[in-house]
Amino acid sequence: MTRITHDQATTIIAGAFTKGAELSLKPLGVVVVDAGGHVIAYQRQDGASTGRFQLALGKAAGALFLGMSSRKIADMTAERATFVTSLGPVAPAGVIPAAGGIIVVDADGMAIGAVGISGDLSDMDEACALAGIAAAGLTAQG
Amino acid sequence: MTRITHDQATTIIAGAFTKGAELSLKPLGVVVVDAGGHVIAYQRQDGASTGRFQLALGKAAGALFLGMSSRKIADMTAERATFVTSLGPVAPAGVIPAAGGIIVVDADGMAIGAVGISGDLSDMDEACALAGIAAAGLTAQG
Amino acid sequence: MTRITHDQATTIIAGAFTKGAELSLKPLGVVVVDAGGHVIAYQRQDGASTGRFQLALGKAAGALFLGMSSRKIADMTAERATFVTSLGPVAPAGVIPAAGGIIVVDADGMAIGAVGISGDLSDMDEACALAGIAAAGLTAQG
Amino acid sequence: MTRITHDQATTIIAGAFTKGAELSLKPLGVVVVDAGGHVIAYQRQDGASTGRFQLALGKAAGALFLGMSSRKIADMTAERATFVTSLGPVAPAGVIPAAGGIIVVDADGMAIGAVGISGDLSDMDEACALAGIAAAGLTAQG
Image (tube, rainbow over the protein chains, first blue to last red):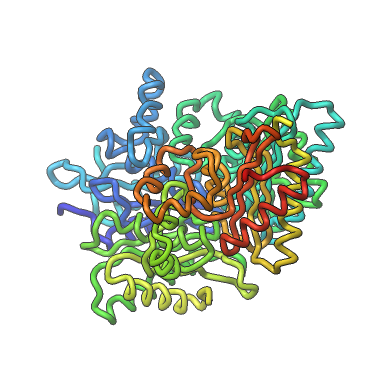
């Protein structure tokens, strides 16, 4: 397992949407990117705002950029807000400091991609990202 | 009603300027954008500073980006300042967290565009945006 | 019909991939955007290069930017190469002058979105875009 | 006369649209900017594509950037294409090398602003820009 396949990416998105429906969440945007932060698949549910793609991508690619979940990046803002803000202009897809961006790892713990979700409260977005990763039989970074 | 027409856009701007005159406000810049954040019409009154266009657009397009008024985005900065700041580099027209950017919706509550105003206090800017939308017989997002 | 729905977007992508398989094409990246050029859905087949997203998006959003297919923009380069090149820095998602970006229109001929494909020869990319649009029962700009 | 007023800007746009109607042109986007290239007013007719703002602005602000009409910049591409292309990334609003961007001058020949139009053939765009400037009693750069 060295990369997330196209089939796995669409399974992740479907799993995330299923979780969102179970939790009666607002319409979501869900992106799956490869280890380089490049988009494999994205879907935006009807009614989600236009910026959901950039938000989801900024969570997923931003997580890979720093090597930690976007929740940990959000936590980092408590003491290092200016540092986190400084990343936006230099990270190709920005860094969005809010839960919902999760790195997917292989058996050795190496990143093989990431999932980013935006649309509801960030805790809910993250729950859907984890559900999607599990639905595809993949492993979220611990 | 699925898009804001050219005639409606100029009516919105005229309505906003009328409100500004009633309230004896400073010179304003008023923009009307379509659902994708693309400019339909803009006018800047004599004496308004050169950046009013970017400020008005960043309120209007930023509101569409997140799916909420720029006042709500401003409110969000109280607890999530770094998150809001992180949006600037990834939103095509930026996200300006100050009242004065209002989404216009159709009968189903779907966004068909937005209005953004900058020039006076942001509460005043917003009052003019709402007046302009009403003048055109359109509906502001609740 | 005033917008491309999430279901229609995934149907367009599936239809494009079916056509690509029929024609034994190289792996494709297929994007569907709304009338404002914002991504509704994207999928990249295994083996497609990392830049397929930007290429597909630059075809689709670039077509909407100018109001014509990316094939017509490519044709325009024969006599106006510098003009076409000048669009890149001012178009939010760039303008890629190669066939494969097609505007989707409603009954009145107004743009409701666009499809962009990159991966094989641009003529093949375009054939898949047209097949995807037809699969969803939508209409390509004439 | 040292600046284009708000009233003059809206008169220019109305004059340009009148000319476009006389010539049965496609829907236009018309921008008026001040001497610094900052937008005073813009209007986009129904049916004009989303990129008309950037195209019109890139003609008007690009003309001011180099101190000559966008037609002359277009002519310059015959022998200096790479030079013109190099301007895009460094000019704040880009430089669009196509007729339709005209500098407005005062009695001393100093620039007080510019008009940019996009929507039909560039020769037609330019005819409307000149008509708009004349309608406002202003003077186009010779």
